[in-house]
Image (cartoon, rainbow, N blue to C red; front, side, top):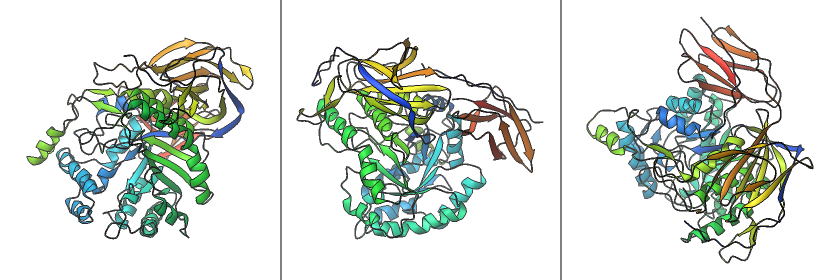
Length: 587
């Protein structure tokens, strides 16, 4: 028996610091103006997170963790993610000890140690299976999936089998990355002699993936802009057969500073000078015209940790300012038409969802005793870091939007330094307007300074008079962190407000208002040869999330998100249950 239903659901989430301020707040409003006639399409699920949990007791299916992850509105998640997967076997979901020896044999001691740190935890919790990861992505709101293929120690046949597995199990993969940070593994006796050697060796992996799935999107790595890998990049730029669909890169600034004010000033400069311009003026001009770009790891500073258990982030990561930086970084990059995805490192550590206990010892003890253990019911004590709390404010809007409006910010407000000499400055306020896929419009703002500023929102040349729902995080101390569930000073607040809006010090602010009400769509399902097709009468410029469950009191899994003009969704063998329920939500 088949049952189906429909719904439209709109959800609303609800020390004295001295920093050099160059100019005090103006007596006039800072005008934030946007034009609804000038918009750029935004890739669905634009903002996301690397998802590294291999070295801890956490499992993908932890429902409490999933609830925290859903509150961050992740547009995509990355599997298995990061340096720790350089010896990871996707078939077993375990770290391969033979491959550990291969990495160590190339002289890559630090990556080898990171991989070795995952061996026992994975063994003790029964591995990190791709199907479980896919369920995690579905259960946190239908996050898209980026796969980082282990091309260091795995084979082309395995890469082909991986793509075939995803295809046959109806797990859509948005992009396949070839190796993680391969530019750190170059040299005479290393995995790659140079960028040309990397491109040559990755071509068979790309071909194998495309043979299994001709529609697969495959990415190669350019170097981290902060690493100074110009020779690596030049080799890829000069490569004759640019076979890749996407260029991936990571960005971890290396300021060599410890004073928090200096770190903020340095990172302000990064936001101003080395975000969008790096793509438009460098990467885009040196790749094929149809190539797109994604950043699958970034933080305000290098040293953000190889996971939760074995390395702590460096400030200003994990702090309130870290959240302001990450939010503005994503917002700026969202204005670049060629950008596909942007997200930071990472979902589960002190930058993201933190825990009072990661229970590494539990799974390590299980592995040493020769059994696997289920950690689902352990009291991890999850809570959001200050950085993640701020990002949740911005990601809510970005990942519910279908387009970016051309937005300007007047320069009559407070300013902040963009270098440690504190002479050059930039506006403290940054703003970006978005067209929601849910009948709403959003304006997301950051304030990087210690002075509040009155802001006037102007749409198509007219000051808006409607009320806004204002959702924000703020604090007087930009270095503030959330230390535990009981000690988390950085929290999301909300209130109704009108023009002009006072943007508080050190803040991320989201303004939203309804432009039109999305009518409840009619929904029908048809079945033919095991293939289910849902059809509905919907609106353009609206994103519908297709959800399913076999238990109306249980968890609804997001099967996919459909936007713009498509009014049907086809899938196969979602569940073997005798009764299945479907619904449409407008996120």
